[in-house]
Length: 575
Image (cartoon, rainbow, N blue to C red):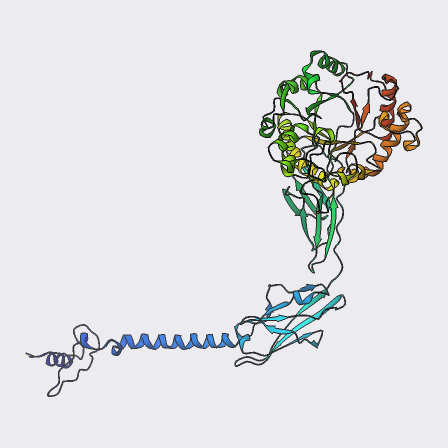
């Protein structure tokens, strides 16, 4: 019987050469004197056969990886850095528009030769580890060129070369004006469509109103707005080279074409007899709109306003409840035109002067309060504007269909005799300030679905500087212009008319023709104030009123507004 492990295994060999498990026997070495067998658990891990095989595999993988990294590190892969395959540039300003070429990681040790149409370029610099910054020479003629980059031989690779077409383009892209752009209805969406050069992009600027969408069609571009933009729409076509072409578009709102309105004061609406007289004109079908005062020449807010500054200044003297007046008139199917006397405002001027807010009031060169009209407020001051705009917004939100501004000007007289605080030395004019005011007002009112108009002097079309009313500029931000062409207000010889007050047809027709000329192309409507009162020694009645209406219609006016300070009219519907 074997007495140890070795003897036992040797016995197995003698019985067939295989152990009981049927596997080939591993030869064992008998330890000599002084030695012993080392148990498997005590053999170092790295010397074990399985671990040695794994180490060999990992070492080979590491060698392969390091070799791949070495190859990659010396490889040059040339491409335009922006991923494109074409360079399009203008001929000038090229130092600010370099061509960037990616070289790959192998570019660190490589040398490069850059040519344009075969001519070597010298303004080539490295930018970072893997980018070439190439500046083309200014003044290249328009046309096509080849830009080539050659990389010198590296450790594992031969020379590398890549080239790209370069187009020098100084021709601005074409863009067509919007087609079929007719006046739109207030509150309706607006779509601008036109031709656009293929490949050009379109930039759109319409002030605060962002377009709903800008898309490209087979015909060109299509821009959609949620409502008519107030600001002039700026369309800019930009091609790949950066050339730009601009188009400016005014979107006009279609104002009612047959406005027939009469003026009534707040006190007049609160008077049963006067109100009944005006409603009688409505019920007879002679008028289809009523101009109702919201804030008058005295600075009085004549309805139940909740505007904080109006209440603070003591301006609110309610002669009527606005909601009730609107209900009465709307039930009769007529529009309500709310008149606001803007900057002639004795109430606000008194309040501002007495509370130390003198910057809200026009002054004399010596710092005294300007006495004109009992107090003329500062049309350049944001707080004065905000006050008037708050009244307009309150009325429009209540349902007033139009806001008609009055006294949107400076006082008559020599500008040197008056100071507009905050405007002196700025280079700005009264016309600038008024245009900005109308623009801001139109943005707010259009969002509320109300029209905007302005009453202007009858001579403003030909003499805008007299009181700061540049009609050509106003017309671009107003839905309608309302010139006060009262025959009794003109001097003899005006417009070649010997006696304007005795020749109402002649003076009205001539004056409105001047406005039509100045307003041409603006998209704004012409709705004049006509005279239904007696002044200048001539009694006015139905015949004189009818003559003015006929003249306005012949010139192409969109209707008329009749003025009578007492709100009592002779108008009989003829004309």
